[in-house]
Length: 212
Image (cartoon, rainbow, N blue to C red; front, side, top):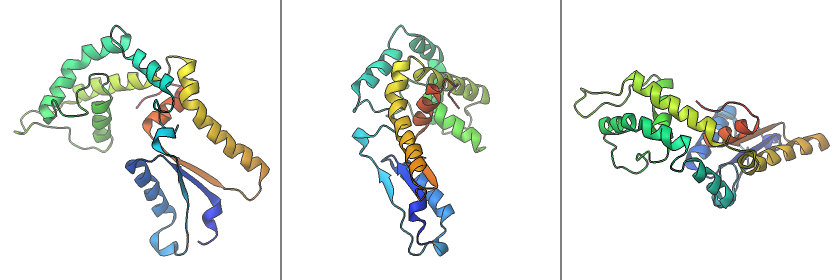
């Protein structure tokens, strides 16, 4: 209702999926027949300066550390080479071989993300054009386990990467706590619409396991 504008603090990264996720939440909180006259400001920071995702553009050191993590000769590279035949098989079945985003040259996360989402929503796994060969559960389990390991490992390589990624986000959260302690009429609810990578580095900085 009018007047609710000051009760919420809304923040999203400048990505279509995170903006739509926040919009869906607000549709539930404020259905169309109840929100006449309500204007809820949403704050976005330009992509190249936003730290609600691992921003190596704003902080090149982040990119250097993460690139070193996946370099040849690392445990990451050895594990990825071991699971590559399964990733190649899934690409062949799904018809995505050679397509942008599916080269899995540095990560198993692309297919891990897709297959885990389909598993969570009880959807069929990809099949080839004939329908005779489909991705099997054992392949899904292996790829998702590797993607899970990657998520846990990526932001746990050092305290430096945790400071550079999670640090700015935690500072933003801290500012909300400080403001709430000083003002009785401030926001009652603060919402961040971000990414799985945001959760990864936030949880890693708390010294907890990350992953699916």
